[in-house]
Image 1 (tube, rainbow, N blue to C red):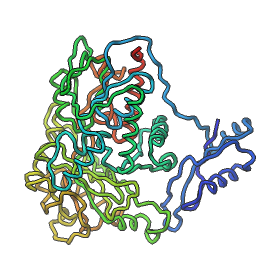
Image 2: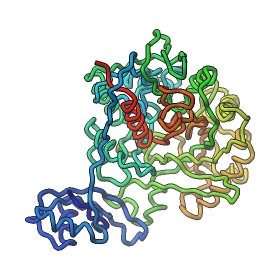
Image 3: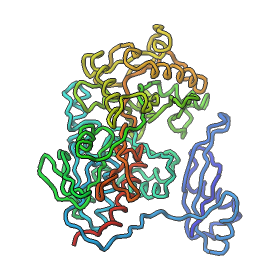
Image 4: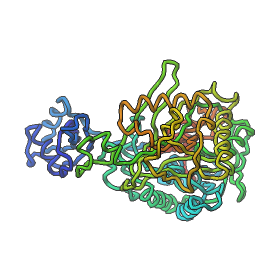
Length: 527
């Protein structure tokens, strides 16, 4: 079994062979002792600006198994075990088809796992395929009409298709490496397997999702675009059928991988008697700096050094009462995008390509919203967010987003902008204090003050705030029982970010896989 050697210090831009040699020598080994070797992880250590370097982990497989075992007991060395899903497939048979509603990361990986084990799932995606979707989104950004069915939130790949394609996560699930490997097989850059902060970029992610779709179809699965789940028939605690605008489907199981913006689907589920509960989430604005200023804030005089990655940050402040303000979904070298999915409401988000070569960096500057902040009821958070979105549209009079400088938000001063806003279809100068409840504005100000002491770029009073960001996570939870099914049902499986069980591409994909495994435990594939 291979070993992982950690904490190998290497120069920026070191070749893989050099990194492996450093690890081999650190253990007193030679190349002749190895069966195989490879770089496992590379991260950046920029804590001391005069000594910015890489910290690496290396995987080694030795010819001498006993020596390998002894080395695994050393500090900084451990055994490596490949994470693979291990399906336990029931012998029970059920009539109907497994239906997966939603083709974002959770739905994609759930359907992929089911298809590769013989289940031939039917995927329902309310939006269009990624090529048509991209065309329609670009048209909207250029001033065209919003399509409520196909937009940044809905369509092949889910909301993550128009993002930075970040693959970082805090869940620590062993299946994370499996997800990375499958993404690489489907066309993602190989570097996602070893970079500590991997990302795909929206440009490369679009090809990856198409390849996953074709893999599912090649195994007998179906992916039906522009087909929305409209209602479900429940009987005796089971979903008997799923009705769409294209007809009804008899179901053996229904997976709800619907994403955080499927507000009409949440309403339908509540009417159908499915148990939903409200969930805390966050709202705020996108803050936009020059990427060069972010780099200087992090790297000082070393900014611009070859092999240094684009600067990224993650900042947070939590008050004693639990209220928090934090940066989220930071997009180096990216753009702020129009992410609305409903007429008469503005939503912002961030996106960047694989090269992250845009002039600006942006991130959500988000304030936590607790259940006590919005109206009672399962859908109270949705209503809270929708009111902000609609107020933004009224302030603007169009899908141009309200924006102001940091200095104007802090004290009403008229500092000139230092950043050209990247948001399309454009921005309008507006007072964001009119948009948000007072507690949000107060926390934004406090966060900006704190973060300016941690990163110089946050002290730029001419940086731009574009609002609102309201789709940070789902404000609703479709509560599951111990079997993974929704409470009170036997074959309805809430899954991913929209159901309240994930936050980002990686955790959603892992939740999709684990949901597929739960289904397999319940019944076997069709004959």
